[in-house]
Image 1 (cartoon, rainbow, N blue to C red):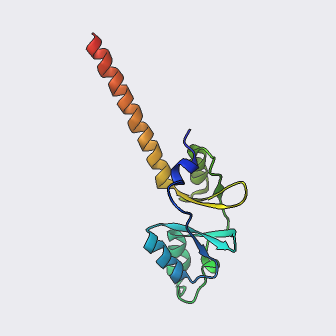
Image 2 (cartoon, one colour):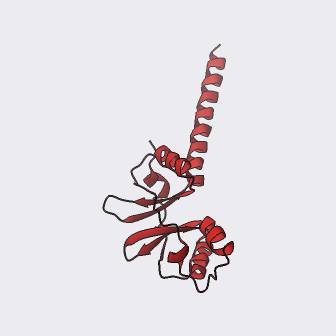
Image 3 (cartoon, rainbow, N blue to C red):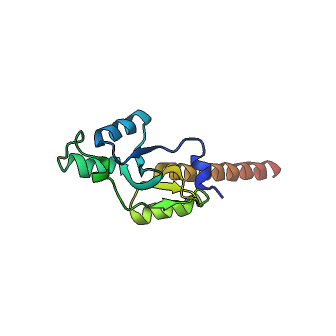
Length: 146
């Protein structure tokens, strides 16, 4: 069973402060080449800001990214997952909620990071590729025995 921890363990958790301007958060996203970031007040995660929030709540709404705090335009309904969760459960949660990123928070309430839908789909692709390879190997081994 692949867990969320298996997928995100290679990187530090990215986050931005709720008092940062939208412009500063967008710069942060671009510098790190990520599509979403957890928003914190102190040690507590209070929201998520994503490319989708930027499009709908900033650009489309005509909000000034220099003067607007990210806390005003972030998604506030935090949908989270445990690092010990099976990746398929997390993927189902994303499909059910229509989102592309989940905040990963451990039992102590610590931010562990975020996981993106594309990462979970990549795990599926890797598993399917391995399965096809195993089936091909079995087929060729049985053909050689005949």
